[in-house]
Image 1 (tube, rainbow, N blue to C red):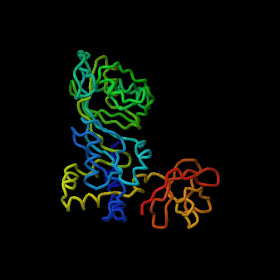
Image 2: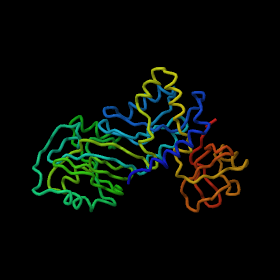
Image 3: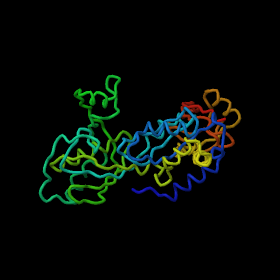
Length: 331
C-alpha cells in the first residue's frame, strides 16, 4: 500500500525539467504544487498562502483536508485549476489513529466528547481486523454531521454548528485496503487506501461500532494522492517565505511547480497534427486522423498535446472524433 517514492520522485524530477519549471510571467504560472499541510491550517488557508506566494489569484486545492489532518494537499494553479475534477477523484492513502471508548460531535479530536463506552473485554488486534474486514471493498458510509457536503445549498457543517439537526444520507464509498499498523488500547493505528468522497472520521466511528464501543479519530495524515506522495511535497514554511517576498523561496517555489501534464499524468497522451491543433484550440471536434498515438477505444478522457508536449485540451472519444471537454491556454 505504501507509495513508491523512487517512481514518484522520478516523475517529479522529469516534470521539473520542463519549461513550466522555469521562471515565467505571473499570468502564465500554471501547474501543480504538492504541499505538506500542517495541523491547524484549513485547506483554504493553504490556497490563500499559495496565491500570495505565486502572485496568482487562480489557485485551488484538489481534495479538502480537515484542519486536524496533515499531509499531502495538491494545489492547482492557473489554467491547471481546470484539472481539479481529475485530481480529486484519484485514490488516496492515509495513516490514522483511532481512540476507542469516546466519541465526539465532529468524530475527531477537534470536537467535544458526547459519549463514552467501555472497551470490549479481550479486545485484540485480530478482533479489530476481523471487525473491519467486511468494510473492505466498499460500503454505505454515513458522512459526519460536520462536513462540507451541501444540503439545500448550504454546507452541513454550518447547519450543525448552529445547533440544527443534521442527518447525512449514507453514500457508497470505495475502501480499497485497510491495514492495522499497531494496537495498544485504546489506540488503533491504521493505514487506509480509499476512493474519492471517503471520510476517515466516519470509518473510525464505524469500526468502533463494529467492535461494540464508540471512538473518534485523534490523528490523520494523508500520505498519497495517487500517484503523488507526501515525500515529494513542499513545506508550508517555504510558501510563507515566498509570500513574504524572499526571492530565493519564490524561485524554489516556482521551480517546484509541476506542469499540467503531470497533474493528470495517468491519462492517455495523444499528439495533435496542425489541423488537430487548430480544431482543439477552437473547441471543435478533432478527427482521429488528426491525432498521433495509441488512441483509446473507450470514452474516457485523454490529453491532447501540441508538438512541444504542452497540454492543449482534455478530450473524450466520440466515435471517429475527439470531443473537447476542457481547453487550456498555457501560452
